[in-house]
Length: 292
Image 1 (spheres, one colour):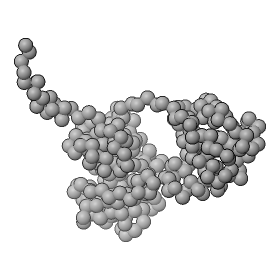
Image 2 (tube, one colour; image 1 turned 45 degrees about the vertical axis):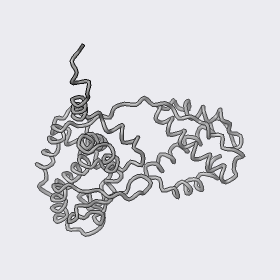
Image 3 (cartoon, helix red, strand yellow; image 1 turned 180 degrees about the vertical axis):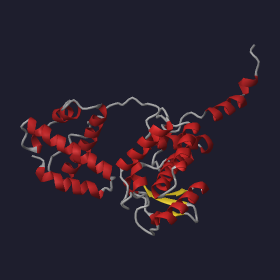
Image 4 (cartoon, helix red, strand yellow; image 1 turned 135 degrees about the vertical axis):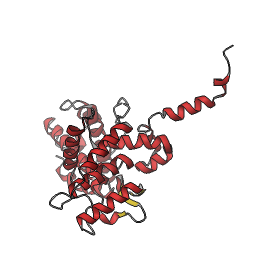
């Protein structure tokens, strides 16, 4: 029933320059919506009611709360497109609410754990793959680069002489980062070893661009060898970079480094800084007053 609208809508969605991950999620959710409509024997998009949208988003196939949120997002985008094209008289998904997801404090590596991880990768940096893995952990642990942005880095995006790195964030926004001196040194050594002047920076043995699966394998091996009692993954390193950077630089600079458009997205990673809190409490005027 949705087939006449699917390809034109997905083409429209691509024009908005969403990330590949967002496109894949959209494609998956809209196929689920197609299955739901088939199960309900609905043959026309005009026969879909607000009640159907509620049922699909929260009940069809017993989705998790995160899947429900993703479905609501898809319905908002899809019905906006349908209304723009005149396929439906009104956008019935406008008032469809997002589910409330309980906020959790992101986990992160302590300074000791991050140092253990770096020492492990440094000890393995004897060849091209070892150097590549060391570059990966330094970029993730120091700059908190997103997985998609990390994988997408090309050699042309790196300037070790000036200490600059350009990455593409969500929405294809080009973002410039300052590289620490130690990272520039490792990158310079890695570039000499791979002997390539353009193309993907982080490559496999077959000189192809690494994938998210490659990162999973790298972290799985590191977890087995370091004994760190946390599930290691790229997102954990992003949380770690945000937490430790916030301690010395504050939320504004942390927001820039992470590439967040909104500061509210940064705050959830920037945990309460106990060092700054202690300084504040010492300076608080009532801290110096004796109890009456």
